[in-house]
Length: 265
Image 1 (cartoon, one colour):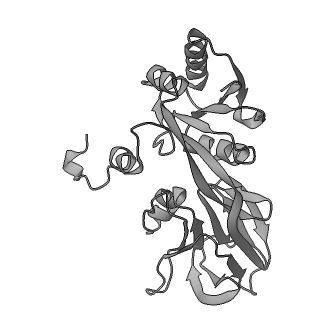
Image 2: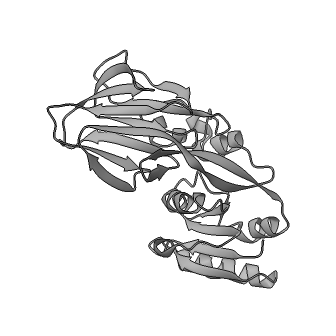
């Protein structure tokens, strides 16, 4: 790694403090890095350290997926599901990275037009407080109608986010699949669907509504009138993971998966 960078979210508490500590750790190891805020991301790097919460990592991952640049998350948020380090173990994590004791995982992404998402696309009606009708097509073939608050189209990476909260299953990030989850459907038979990632998803709006709204990773919002088509992106997010860390240990440690509430401290 010749060109390193540090991207940090200045709106999060202690981000400047952690950024300065990270810079010092790198300098002690003879490594310099460019530093910038996540609202001024730059390309041209071999590796980028990202300081912030999962939202910060999602935004950074979308940007650097276009350049096939690995990113490594240092969590300052609440859950930190996409992060591999915290400010408490910053030094040891950075030293492992510099020694090459890590791997890079390719994570599939979703795309609609020029918009891409690492976690999910969420489609909802613009009428606040009311359900909407959605028609779902896969590979241009009608599947079903949903009367629901919305629909989540998620990647395996995003299956532990909004999709999980809406009743969807957890999908291993190594699987080549997408998940379709209706939000609060008014039909008992409307259940989440897992499909291959090479299929094309189309959601058509109700003719009685003027516009629907779609969001990418809960961060970018835009309206559409008739339909939205979502498919696998040509880009992949490259997440740097420390050796010894795997998906199921993250489930246990960060989501307390399968742990009795009485055992959680």
